[in-house]
Image (cartoon, helix red, strand yellow):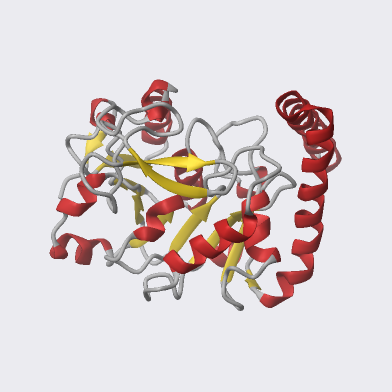
Length: 306
């Protein structure tokens, strides 16, 4: 069985590499694809030289850091601005998991934070140094991420996460758990098979929570009814500049959604995906709820009982 499992994982790896390369060369052309692969190789290989500067954890070690059976997962919706201090205090009694740009927050210490990219696409002009410095300056200006375990994508194409380690944009001795992406994208509680990345990085966060064994998973600030973000003013959203990694304030996202229109992940099927996941979790005694009663997810998930 062990040999068959290894062969299956190896075959899936080869297939995933094939599709990655096919898409890269299709998008960037032959010379662009070659150059982009050189960048990816450099980051991926040199990252391993810097791992010794960090406290790299195994999943079994991270799982022992759980302090409750409930985890609050934080998105970046504007409803976060309406939460009261006593609500944030209640969140802190349980485990807390942020992802992506939740690092802009100044409310609560975060136990775990999951990252994939930072405003990048498959672009040979992407400025890793600007993106890394930008992330670092936002994340560590306050004390909310001093004890955080950072969950970093550990794959060839994960150039932002690889750059964070390669160029030391995470402070030395930071706690890191590296993760793979599940291929195929089947939701499983086995962390070694990878986290599911479907439609949104929200799926990665929920997949991680499932692997960690939390019995209650509560989504906070996952609004979806507009494309605004908690750290911006009303009427503003973010347009990622794929060439630099900059988060540019705009009225329209890089996905073509106006600030007052539903988030792009809604059109891509995130509500339907979580409808299916909620059914799976319910059958296994796991609760998946949404905190904001106005969230578009409230049509498929129960509202958290405060």
